[in-house]
Length: 442
Image (tube, rainbow, N blue to C red; front, top):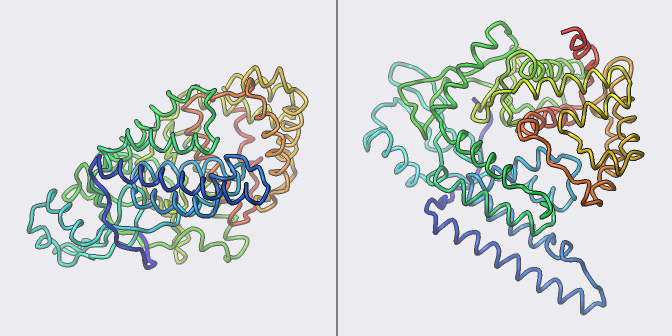
């Protein structure tokens, strides 16, 4: 799956409920101590700091990053999800925490890996391979990946789930929600119980590697007509609920394309945006995790390698219809129709539209103008994002205007936003308008 060298630290992953709870307790105590110390320092200097300022100090950022990266599993996964979803809208201090989580690279030490694989394949499991790389070639939030060669010559990528991940999902989600409330990012006025329940369900599905293998096969079939994509082949012999084996596919990190010629970057992002549109309006099935590590690139063939199908979920007809209505209204340049479509789809609450019509109108005008620019859209030009952020934060100051979009829409938007962030990272130029124009007659 990868052709670059993974250079992470080996560290035992806490697997028991009490040991993981102890890490959260240590984290909360450390953060609280940091708040007290920083508060005393600022008060002595004659300042009157806000609680959020005391929470998001460099010391506390380091504590949160280190402890969540040690836990891995749902705790780290949620941090990565939020950092991808919120993008430019996060406070810079919180973005620093979550951005570091995406890059953290702790993995299981050999003894713990041996114990995990022996429980699935038996104590003599190494005899089944001609070669098995003891050092992982990649490590993520839920599992780490090893390269192996079977005696009959199959080269495999084997993803091994960290111990305790599945059993700790529910408690980890609740504990991370508590930490996020401490930062003020998760408002108490909004009922987030349905969102937390859905996050738990999604993470339980992602931790089921048999399910992920089946989703990988579904995508391989759906993309059989597109030679521009490569999906690994499932290897049934070595796959179980917490071990996923697949064909090893060469590829380089998608971010390495940042220095590629403009035409190449444009072509790659055009393919990925077209894939999102097919998922949304044709397949009715979407891989909703836009983590950059899930996309690899083969420079010699020009093909894109797709990885990690754990977050695959169905796109409901209502979600597809909501996006179609929004896009068509935007193409028509009709501010009123965009607002109506946004409310109908659940993106926008009636209260926000009633209480802040001028601000919302300004935001819609910016979006319409960007959608209807002639020619290719320059994702590297982020000038409009600051204006949208300022207007959105101004509306967000009004607690009566807060609104939770439908959960299915949130997961689809996660993929759309993450794809746009990747396009921005690569400074790609894509004629998106030409790609969505057929929706008017589709």
